[in-house]
Image (tube, rainbow, N blue to C red; front, side, top):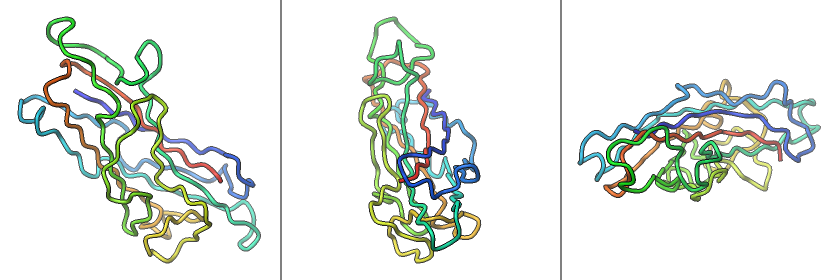
Length: 201
């Protein structure tokens, strides 16, 4: 079984602090834990895909009145395996099943994620992506050098002040997970965490 623990953060970043960090939020609208249970050979070989397992909603507010700032932000996913003594490239092992030493432990690059929303604003919207096999690796959801305000729903990476309450399709993100372990890996219970971090640019 593979368990994904989701979390969130709001980081002041290196921007001009035009965003109101005290009232800007990353909201996980779905349960924090996602479990992928492999209990048949067909699941090991074919994999498991969980569609819409995580929904992330943003509320990004300005510190100053409209027109006096841009409040530009980025949204990223960070993967972590809990650190030492887990090797940096592997899922954290909670328990192993079967004969000691048989098979190898799963690596972080096995997990595939797909991010989308109603306006196709994410970077690589709708495409399957993998993390580098390194704890602390990042996948950017919104990472736009140009300021792009909300309201167009035209597929650009919206990164200005706004909220899922007023612009749901631009400030909500649906995350799918896919894992295809095959038969190489040692059966057991493994865990990693993914943190969704909102940072001012």
